Picture 1 (cartoon, rainbow, N blue to C red):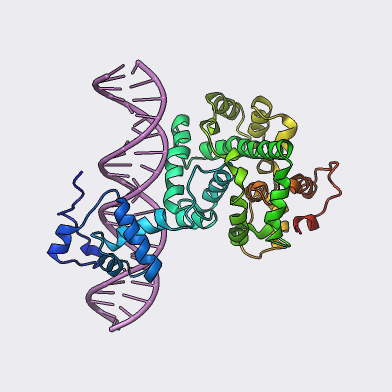
Picture 2 (cartoon, chains in turn green, orange, brown):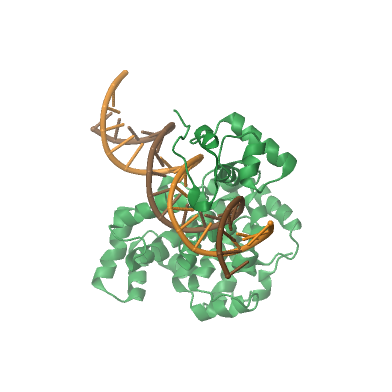
Length: 329
DNA sequence: AACCAAGGCAACCGCGATAGA
DNA sequence: TTCTATCGCGGTTGCCTTGGT
């Protein structure tokens, strides 16, 4: 493939290059040699000033191209591999909050790039919307995400966590090791404080067990169940209940799935104790659980559920737990 | 084995924001 | 204040892979 771009121009940004430079510029996939040149140069001189960096490194690429390659692929902390269930959950939740703010969303998933998340959204999430024959921004689709997809992800995360605990006792020890590096870690660090803690969570070697697979897709029956209910009754709560009763989740499990029952004021109350910033929605609970089950606190996340139940007025055997349990040692 | 369609993803493009001369 | 260079973001494109026929 001839990747030389004789037509390249980016004059709109004032990134002017002389004609000879433009003739020589390469486009398309990067070669190993180019990657090495970029890595070596940045290792010795640091990043920034991308146009001059490209020239000094002897790369026949635009500064933009170099920056993109570095940020999205070569950076040492880029996290490769499939999007995990926890990450999926976070993406769904954060997108519902922030929309297509890919960069902002990516900041909450250390090692993931905005490009990767954007691609995930466009290929996986929009596929579901297409299956539903509805717009990805429609209420119909958002309901499907909130009441089916996200609870399903939670269930799978929980199941995966259980398996890890049951299958190998080392899982707990590992989590504890992580926690040792994060004394007094606070689950309610929420979107602002998540990043540091998240990183250690993602280093859990067993997280591949929660990697996304094709089975993440909602089945046609799921859609039917949800929207058949929707057709019969426009009351959202009824839709939820019917979905729970007819879907894969058991009713009791459904009741204890945070995104289905959390009231805004409940979480606002909790969230206010830890940050005075954003309005917290029911879906925040989903994110918190995702964080919890990410690995740092697999052993204790059942207690979190208990606390959350208590917070929402669900009296259970775990109701003697209190919000203080949200701080881990 | 060959062809085709769909999916996944890396890379590119355009534009607005920002910094600094 | 204006102009230019650069950065960063979101949208889009197009190539490669995979799965189905």
